Amino acid sequence: MQEKMQPIPGGVCAARGFQANGVCCGIRPKGDKPDLALIYSEAPAAAAAVYTQNLVKGAPLLVTKEHLRGGTARAIICNSGNANTCNADGVAVAERMCALAGEYTKVPPEEIIVASTGVIGVPLPIGPIQNGMPPLAAGLSRSGGGQAARAIMTTDTYPKECAVAFTLSGGAVCRIGGMAKGSGMIHPNMATMLVFLTTDAAIAPELLRELLKLTANDTFNMISVDGDTSTNDMCCILANGLAGNAAIAGPGNDREIFRAALYQVMANLAKQLAADGEGATKLITCHVSGAATTDDARKLAKSVIGSNLLKCAIFGADANWGRVLCALGYAGVDLDVTKIGVRFRSAAGELAVCENGAGLPFSEEKAALVLAEREIALLITCGAGSAEATAWGCDLTYDYVKINGDYRT
Image 1 (cartoon, rainbow, N blue to C red):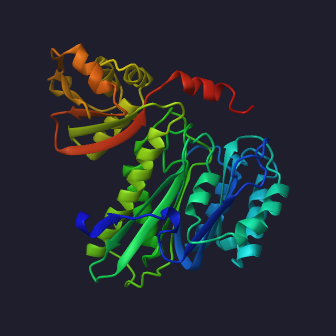
Image 2 (cartoon, rainbow, N blue to C red):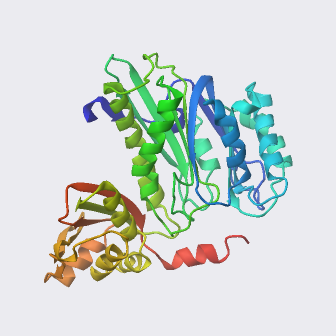
């Protein structure tokens, strides 16, 4: 299946019939960064989304849930700099954002997805958004994905984009693209932060919803930066069918090809999010194999990458493998500790540190070299079965505290 897929440029605009743009409308106090993004489909599109499971939810999520009841949408409007959460007028402001976007795109407001990200508990002024909408809509283009990706950033250090082309069994070439933001407050329990995906494949809304949820479980639900689940997490996808394929509606080769392409894009974005965690200097990949069940493997992998002690050890290039076993031990999985193996791997080599639950002799000099790299893999074997899972995280640094010590001000 992999040979039928290839990375392509274009991000959220890589698929046929999608345009985007991002502008600076002045939502942020300094007014010096892009803060308003728009994604538009030239044709009606099936739509699906998954949301945060935090009981405190941003007003845009409540509005989007209502708008997606029919399983279709044609545009996405998103602002950064203000989460529009815990505000008395939040729903009205989110609805007004949809109305404004609809006015300039000729899309009914109920077919528009709305999202916000930024500070919680501060009223979102509609004036800047209203003033920014004319240039935002006028600048929509097939090359505007990059501008849109930058406009949804908060503490991100770079825009996150990905796209692939893939061939269905009937020969139709389709594309999936996307963009994401997220750097802190990341420990998702559904999807993550804000992720916007587009595809020109024709697919039934029910199947699109199913595959988005399944793939989120293996990608965005498997990352953690700091253990905080945001109030505004959302991942959504639009599928406008302009590739001309016979609609994918159920089991078969095309369903599996589409899901593999969707996974490739979502996993790529998930890794980018983890790597760009607030203050992060290293990407941590934890692969657990030999677990009794997939659910066990997921719990174990997420427990490891969520361990603050381990994250600090990786930051300091300290091969303190005991912290790995500690995190495995409180993951809530019935585990035979005497069968656990642990290895560290990076571009500088591989280092076995634990076998059958006991330490192995290793060179501290080699360990320092292996853990000094930008990308570190933790390979864990359980000896309990054949299930496996991968999770992604980052190290915990001094800068994380600095960033969040004055986030609001």
